[in-house]
Image (tube, rainbow, N blue to C red):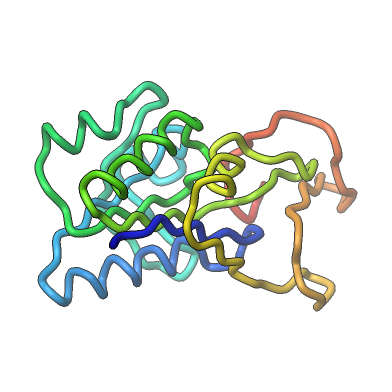
Length: 174
């Protein structure tokens, strides 16, 4: 029986690298992988997923209004679906992924942030915490050397910012 996995961590915890390594492991065993990324994530173009370690792969871009079950039925089968930056999916899209787990017996592995820099949940992550079978924290270290538990947005003077838009793309430099 397939499961839905949510693997979350603070920025810099190698979530994308783990997603790409997982993709490699499935493909090395001859399995077909659907690698998905939300169209909101435009850092490396709309079809590329790239980790800070240099790993990269082509992915299917999922728009905010893409119905994932319909896309799956149209484009064909997969042995596993891996989603990077899953926090940017809508709760409805998370439910659609859950449908694929339950009705098509496809494992779904979602990698992303749990909260933003204000410690507010992303809607996609909140829904994953409600419906995922397995929830795993990917641990990383803060610049101070302690365990990182939240994301911080830092201004050019090194001060923590506590207000602003929830989404700001740019990786380590933002």
